[in-house]
Amino acid sequence: AEALEEGINQLSNSQTTSEDQLAIIRAFGTYQGTAEVWKKLLALAISADLPSLNRDAMIALQNYDDKEIGITLVNFYPKSSSALQAAILNLLSSRSVWAITLLEAIGPKKIPSSDFDQDLLARLSLHGDSQINDLVHEKFPDVEEKTPSLRLHALEQILSAQPGDPYAGESIFTERCASCHKLFFKGGEVGPDLTRYQRDDLSTMLVSILEPNAEIREGYENVVVTTNDRRVLSGFLSDEDTNSIVLRGFDGADITISRKNIISLKPAGRSLMPSGLLNGLDDAALRNLFAYLRISQPITK
Image (cartoon, one colour):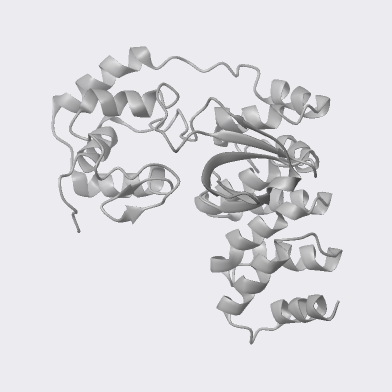
């Protein structure tokens, strides 16, 4: 009890270093504490003054289930960065009480429906909650994926029409790809490192982007984990031992789950990579992105 109170006091103390705050946040994320704990974590999750702690605080909130958490994060969503939005979607889709709040908030002023990919919708349906299922059907009446086969030939024509600018393409890569993929030391570690990928083979690369579920690289298979505290989590296994697993979600966050808390662990049959990655890009932007994806050495502006 004394250690708990001391941790809460340290989180509230403006003199506590960010490194110490991070250690406390991660400690609180290993068990379910009091309401005072999750309220402190929630305040840090939406704090504009400590952006480096936002995502870690959200990860720690996984162990709590108060409805106020969902309401607060839904209201924070329009003001947050794209990286934090991914973390919010990942967190709120993990519990049915938050998933309902999340789906009810879909609309132009809060959360656009375009932010929900097929993997997220599939995870929501795994809760087995009739209210969630009704909301999914209401908000997404047509959830069937459209085949990209007809787009493949059109994209090849666009990309072969004239060369793109890799320097302009770097910013598009940063916005759309770098949260998951690394290319020449720039980017995240959710998906495979693209540096040694067959990036000179345009047809193969296009199929991988347009149809991410067609072939999933070994070691990056998406799994769905159901826990005994009614969470539904998705990601790939970044590490595991006899006592626990480490699940890396589409937001890049690692979540450690004790094996004794796992009810089921099943292949999702889907890639973590969204199928609409190229949506909204005009011809010039497409050429620039692929020019950057096919660079043979790092570039700097």
